[in-house]
Structures are given as C-alpha cells and as structure tokens.
Image (cartoon, rainbow, N blue to C red):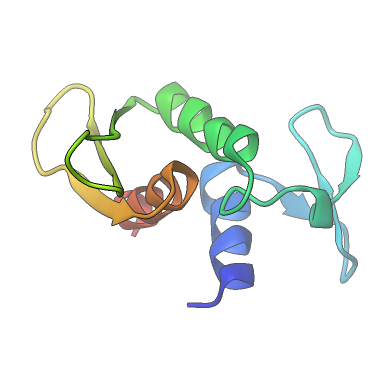
Length: 107
C-alpha cells in the first residue's frame, strides 16, 4: 500500500471524511471543505494524533511505547471493552506506528 493509499484509507475509514467529487478536497468534521494535501498522519504527529482521538471516540484504546532500548516506536490498538487481540505496529516514528496499527485495527 502506498503512502497516499494509507492516508486515503485513514481519512475515509477512521476519520469518516468524504471526498468532494474527484477533487483533492474533503469534507472535514465540521462540514467545511479542506485541502487534503495539508493532512498527512504518516508525516505529521498532530495529524496522527487526530487518528488516535477519532479511534478513542469509537472505543479503541491506543498504547504508545517509545522504549528506551529501541529506536523504534511500538503502538498497540485494541478494543477498550475487551482488551484482547491488540493490533501492533512498530515503526521508526510514532506517527508511522500509529498509522500502521490503525490500519490493522480497521482491516
């Protein structure tokens, strides 16, 4: 999956945003249009945190482990009410790990 496909999947499946026709614009949470090129949770931690917050609204819990022994970030996402079958992702940045675990959780 390309970075663009990952961002598109997170925008539609997690954030619940809808595209404005065939353009690069999206309807955001408040119904206003925004340029999707400004939202990239793979590169921007603030955008990745929006994914975490949106998952939390749907009863997903996110654990982030930056670990002192590894240069990688480890993220586990699981359903709050079961605390079973966590979806794990390990990546070189926190935002990439968040996105990877989120993709596994919604698959």
